[in-house]
View 1 (cartoon, helix red, strand yellow):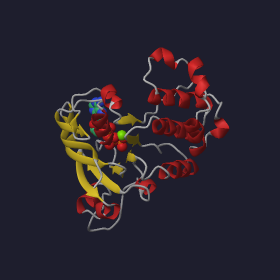
View 2 (cartoon, rainbow, N blue to C red):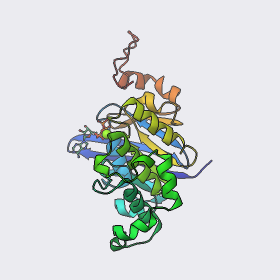
View 3 (spheres, protein in one colour):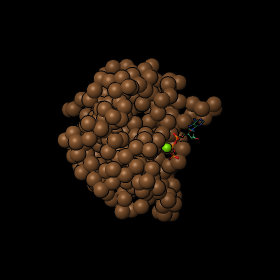
Length: 261
Ligand SMILES: Nc1ncnc2c1ncn2[C@@H]1O[C@H](COP(=O)(O)OP(=O)(O)OP(=O)(O)O)[C@@H](O)[C@H]1O
Ligand SMILES: [Mg+2]
């Protein structure tokens, strides 16, 4: 059995009277590709924020490779190599694609002060093998020198994921990376992510389950802050509570009303 990378025990987060994440026990093993699905407001993003340290939990504990990180800041968790969260705002829009990649690479490989991150220094690293390979993998060679603010949404999303991968986190956590993309762009991103399977621990939140069906090895379904199912794709989807809560299948009338399929 591979190493357990992330484990949560009874994590709970309330916003006033609302229990956004309700006593969630979760575990993720090395090189596992796991998905979390759930309808709007199920608590998926809040759970991500608890794992990355953005919010402290009201109750429960979070472990990274057996070490209790519950009270650690996001920066401390990143320093442990734990996660580098994918965020929509994580690019530098007034820099070229290549320079965004160089900055991330530099940060991951050099114990550096901010000053050393000055672009003049970074430009010397534009041709590092790993950066060139990343441009290729993520199909970004043709926009290498384009400013990020001039990229299409699909290109920008690929760059964000490329930056997250280049930072070499133990866990690549992606919160709805396909949101707002056209089918053709989704295809490219899934292909690129598919190439990471087996090489990287990936935790992906997705609304449209059909997109991650062939990609994730394990699925967790959240509903109203709770985990209602966890296991293989088919197993989860045939679970009676998932059928009732997520798919809103009325067992009398076998019709799905859920729009996210
Ligand atoms: N900062 C916040 N303050 C107050 N309530 C919040 C906050 N963040 C989330 N919530 C509430 O907590 C619940 C869970 O939200 P969360 O964003 O985690 O859901 P989600 O599963 O990611 O949903 P979506 O699919 O829409 O992204 C929702 O009812 C939401 O309104
Ligand atoms: Mg969310």
